[in-house]
Amino acid sequence: MFRDRHEAGERLAEELAATQWQNPLVLAMPRGGVPVAAPVARRLGAPLDVVVARKIPVPGSPEVAVGATTYEGPPIFNRAALDRLGLTEDGLADAVAVEQGEARRRVELYRGGAPEPDVRGRDVIVVDDGLATGMSARAALGHVRENGAASLVLAVPVRAPDADPTDLCDRVVAIEVPAGFRAVGEWYTDFTQVGDHEVRRLLTSG
Image 1: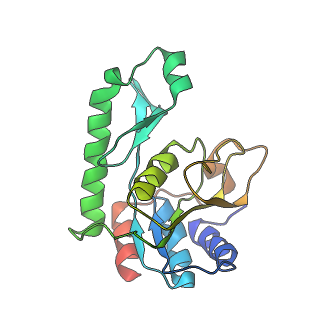
Image 2 (image 1 turned 135 degrees about the vertical axis):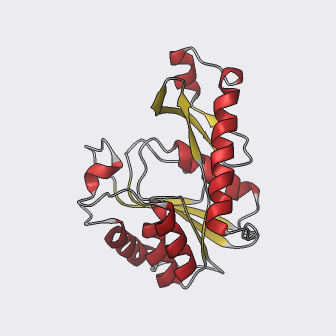
């Protein structure tokens, strides 16, 4: 469906350019969302920054997420998953602290000590390379909304049909919503992992 994240970003930028934006700001979700967001920011003439959200994993199963958090929280949880697995929010407090610490580390690394951009009164577009469960996106959107964005849009090249966090933003833009969705990486020919160095290069080359 997409050759790589850059090509996906170019196609997403084409889609988003049809809207009139007021003082837009593009916030990428690292690491994979940054190469997608870079062409979007260039096309819209908008600054590019990051909003870092981390998944909260099931103890002993790091690939299975039951929630997500930004560096300052509060965390959000999939209540049905917690009940199904017999987990509680209090029991996951240590995992939340670890992920908030990692989110804080990444924010500091990617921004180089610069302050968080002021979203008040701006049209903010949060970009990722795809949406599977939507937990990380929900944490990121909640963080931006609380900080006073005038309008908030989530933009992704591809998403699962049931991953639709429109309750936390004004609109979700997705180029493709395939019925057979299983994983984001299946919809890219090249889904090579993005490293911290590449994230910083894209953010500073703006």
